[in-house]
Length: 213
Image (cartoon, rainbow, N blue to C red):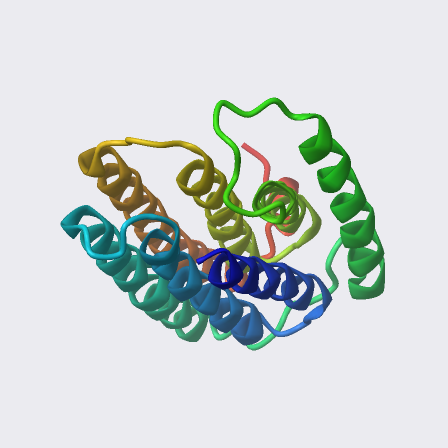
């Protein structure tokens, strides 16, 4: 069981690096989808895989994160006629360097963070923190609103990983409620991106700062 958790954490880490270093939004969407599927499997390898609670949570997570989110984002990308990231605030090489610093910071925080229960793997807490930092970084360092939505999804992936791997006895309704809130948020963001693109012919969030009231 621990080996499978370690493998999921390594894949999550590599996916974060791929999104930091990729200039193509389609790659970021697919990577986030793979992360969603892997995180959907986490309840099965971390908890009692035969429990109905684990199967319900896994199915909901894979459906929403691995299928619904990519479909919504690819549809928004087609509607906005976006093919790749354009002139991010922080370059892709610089983003990877910052990612390495964020990894070191995550390891340092994880080594000093008191936990109510021991984690199933020593990789869980640092990778979860690293994923949250990467999500925040994508939100503030990318110009395209679509990439910022992906950053929001990555941030939630980190929070989901931390909570699922550390907390115990969380009611399934609360976990499913969080997933549904996330789905509604991304759905609304997709509509907002479409509306912004239709009105202003772009989704560069930096250019929206020039609007005057």
